[in-house]
Length: 262
Ligand code: KIV
Image (cartoon, rainbow, N blue to C red; front, side, top):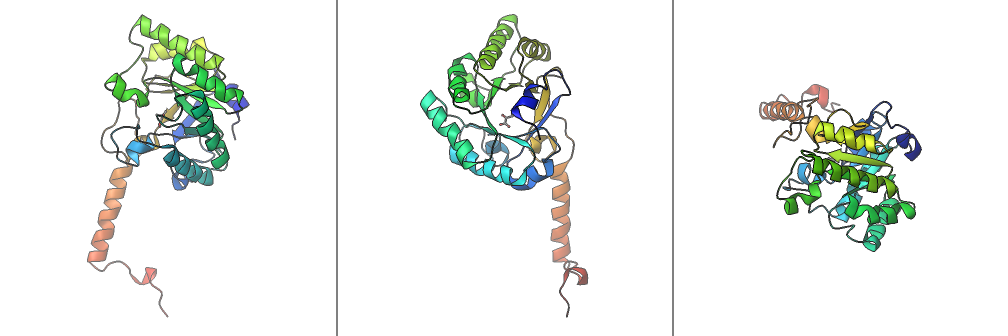
């Protein structure tokens, strides 16, 4: 199982594999296969059918993180800090401490660049491991007026590099780069010594993360450009459920094989 040290040492090595999970069942299927499981607040959209991540609460994240920790005993687990739970140092420390005291997660993830570096520093100085998250930050969707790809011009690239450096200096052990032009993500990655984990950020980061329900084809509402579907999950399930309904209605299920017979 990965540790903070082995994750940090993976910079420039074999890319880190990260997948989200929200429950014990799927976490157990991913356990030991990927390097890191992220209990992302994306669960608010794919599990809770909400339009964005903003209404995920601390209680929701703690519940799902406990479930994931029960299902995946041999994988490094990161819990996303939900919107509004780390707006100042005191609140951030209180809420991030709950992740450690109430779940088995190994680290928390925080969205934000330079303006959030002081929060990350407070957590790391109080022995809480932090994964940063810059670029397209879903928790900023309403104030930004949508999901916008970053790193399209030199000024923005330089701002992102400053964000990355501030987060590294604050003590984060890794950094998610989301929705950033590939060449910009490469430059950000090269500017810091902690590993970067990309999502929609090209191939030159130190790892990749995908949301499980996107990459396994369970989330039907839309498929972002950066997602590769490794399974048609929704189609397989719909087909199976149609067959079950047909079997029950035709009295083809249960047959003797599935029946207790004296
Ligand atoms: O919430 C989430 O799943 C995330 C990933 C997209 C990185 O933050």
